[in-house]
Length: 457
Ligand code: SF4
Ligand code: SF4
Image (tube, rainbow, N blue to C red):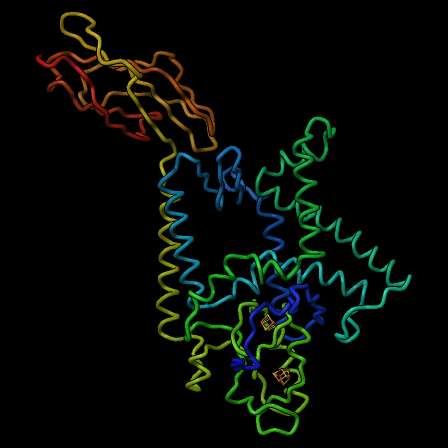
């Protein structure tokens, strides 16, 4: 028996045909107020991407993700790999943020802030429109004659240059402008590895934006795949008001005249009238296009709009409701908590571990000593002259084996440290001691550890 398949059901992404081959999408350039807003947001985001590594706060870059040296700077706050609890907190907050943000605002990130969409729609596609025209009103592929061949060639040459530029913008975030400038300005032979990485990433970006394109969103991006489980009927999304639009057609009762204009501008090639779909990146191009159609036929705008399935079903606009406010409040609390935690971090990080294999030494008839390996990381941009004092018990002695107490900015001080205690101060086989790290009179950090002594005093 043959199964009946609804005409709206698809068992493959729209950009793949029934033989598994690519359907190339020729999206027309949208026009309208949403596109203007998106252009402004995109250029603000690109400006932030370009400028953030150059802006310094307390001598630290606004943004730096130096994975190789395990050093990160987020809004000027230096975070080291040793800040494990902070990194864990950032990861937890990021995951919770993504989940909550998506539950409320759907794929707003995809259409408005994702670098893939910003660069593809606002940079590469605009270059394409410049060289190849606006797809001649969305008529699709151009025939290949010599004029079009040279247009394509010029377009790809500009694509390659832009890909190199974008690679450098991203590398600024990873290795910092100073190291990047060294790779660019010094002979290639001195930075062969760095140069090869730069070239490899540039070619990768070129391939993504020139050829692979929207398939990143429809086939690869894990965030896109998560939408099915994160969205519910109250999530905000770009939605077609089927109650108002149906039955569609030029002479039908519904407001939709089935003109297909919303499909012609869609960068992922879908028909939003078929409901919420995996490929929809919430770019709003179809809203603008449909609003223009509605204006021409003297019907109210926003047949396609930001709303929720619940809002369309009940007829109550529900973009901003109690749930949206409550979840947004949780997001703000999370970010503020993270911000306070990062800004209240200690300027130094101390670890003091017993020298491997050592227990205790008897110095004379009344004094015992223990050896420790002291490691202090300076997380600030200033050199520090440190004093290390025994806080408990106060009358013991503490001495740095190296004698060095200057800690360079962002540097690490490592030294063996000797602690001497009178046997009267021992409370048993293991005595708790507390060490203070001072800069002048200011206690920067205190560290508690154990002092080993003989079983009987
Ligand atoms: S642009 Fe508007 S009217 Fe035209 S098909 Fe799309 S939803 Fe219907
Ligand atoms: S359906 Fe509309 S919002 Fe979704 S990707 Fe296509 S044009 Fe953008």
